Length: 391
Ligand code: FEO
Image (cartoon, rainbow, N blue to C red; front, side):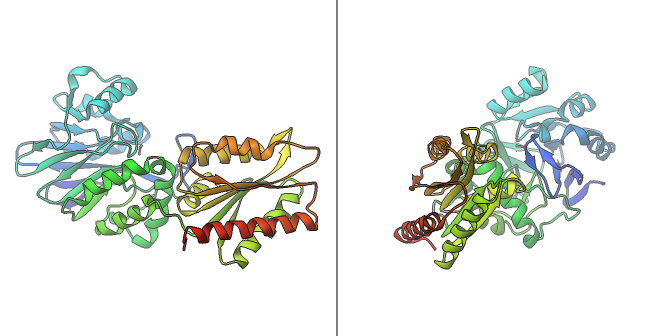
């Protein structure tokens, strides 16, 4: 794709990665992704904002073929999907300097082995004049690594936010179709931003103080209506969960499936939104999205070799790492000859600030008393949600 003009002297560059299906060898990308770089040309200097994943370096170099000079490469974030083509761009432009936060410089040196003399550290609030165009740097740590920053193009009121507000969405739309981008943007928030909600909140306040006409992230389309994504982020980082329960579970021989069906039905009957996630088929990104708003997580597992099923262990570990705002958790389980399922799973979610409710365990296939215990659990969850006035 050729560079796409956003404003006079401001261009989108980069690559759409339609086929990529996995990020960090972990995160599913059902909608592909893009790596957005931006070119800002002032009357005196030219800056390239980020690069692209090394797999797409040739596309970026082709877009740069008629750009004779780049003075600055702004490296908002050291992760390789944005910085990985830096060495090739630096080779093409031997006079260019890389501008990054102090932490960013260290990480870029470590990951890309770029020599010290190519770097210049920029401070929070520092401005860089390109001649009629001014970039102001905002340190925005933890979106998504501790070194991350954003750039604000003062004259055009555009925020270049890198991962912040991004979405893994391959599209030829330069500007966001809000109905289409909402889910991928939420998924992106859930997967990489959610653990740092307090920091994101502070960064949001910083961004909201700016006059904004566009937010241009480094993944997915540009937001022509910044208030759309700002308002979504405010909702996602808020500390108030919804009246929702999610049930990540595995069923090997039908016992857990029967328990999950009864529990979900009992919750829905009582006016609680409840969703089961069969971990044998659910992609973990979908589970991460569900964790953004839910108030209660009920893990469901059969006993396997004396413990929880490995898929449930993995889901509990993931939930613990993502630090959602859930208030309650518990476990439902089935066993043949005994296992400390609840203790194990409770230990795995020790970083969550949740009250662990009494679990429901049964031997083999659930009997009437087990179904009754699930109804009691559903009622207990409803009461807990009511006490917190969740809606
Ligand atoms: Fe898009 Fe954290 O890299």
